[in-house]
Length: 501
Image (tube, rainbow, N blue to C red; front, side, top):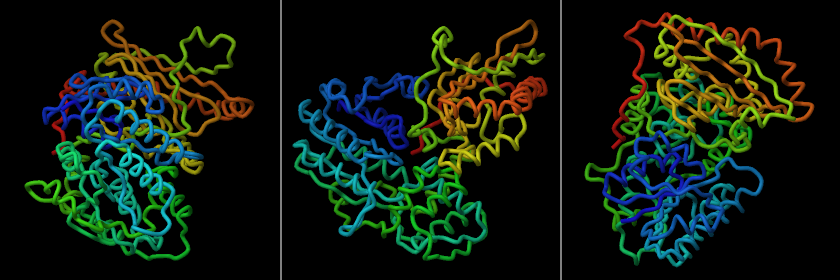
């Protein structure tokens, strides 16, 4: 079938697309920035339509001759009128699918109570589902709760809370019942939903075989990770907002994502019906038990084979425009810091260090200064340094690296990172390597466009540290390349890992 996937750069969408291709479907994706897909293994197997889902004309272009539409977009962590934005996008997609003659819409929503007051994010998820179901195009709404898989937000929150805290004072919601589902089972239902007869137009709850209290999820993780069981004390005083601040500080999950997740955990999150079994049978091997899902996720992370990750989701409010070309700087206030070093290391060794910056490798200078900047960012609701990176060796456009995002990479020569930390202005960091005789030359440039007086004061406040941080970074990166054995230089590319089944 001809299939359109929205949200292809997201956690679920990025895993669904290659499996749809493998199943023999003709896949099309619509993305705002096609360059984010340039390096993904399946980029050459799909049709990419540039466009924004808020643009009806772009939606119509993407819907042409499409039989099945996957709706996998959301604005979790959005501010202000994000509900209006989500509903507007849902209407655009619903109307475009109807005009284009689509035969099926498949939407991944969230488990929610049958009655009572919902969090604003769950409320929005429900209303999006209602719009799609009323579109006139047969729609299946799959309502899932906590999704467990390498790189998923829920898994990362459970993992870090359990690993960081030997004793957990926690909100009352740790006693609520949760029915987690493995990401592989979510993908099973999504793929099979394309084949459901057209008379089916309704929502279905989906969940794994286990129902636990949330606190038991954390201790189940502890068992699989080889940790001691964590005593948990449920406190009545932690509101969702306060709990969100706590999660923001002790995990890599930023506050803008932690708060809506926690708001959704105020209720039991379990399936109310199992009607999906009559429409889509479970996987042949059965649904994945929670602890096996945790074990599989840990194995993937330890092997560096995380297909997609919450880390690479767009950061709301962060600069998204590319760095203007140098001639465009004329007439603007721009601060720069240039460093250059010659190295005896071959360019391949130097590039391996450059592409490996951040995450576990750090930033090669003044770790305390980087750590403090990361904590300040977290305190103000930013992503902080602990977001890390998805792959320890390879980077692709759009990847998150601590509080930076890969804007451009030209392997094995040039890397540009765009800052996503809280800062009064826009900032970039460029690292490059080029051959120089028998060795190589390393160039490093930090670029900062200040915003107003606060931006200028910020630059001069941190300026005294530049000589330590940026100079030390240039020195250590070249020294690290020179210290690497010749056999340790990584190849300039590698085959994609096999998708998680």
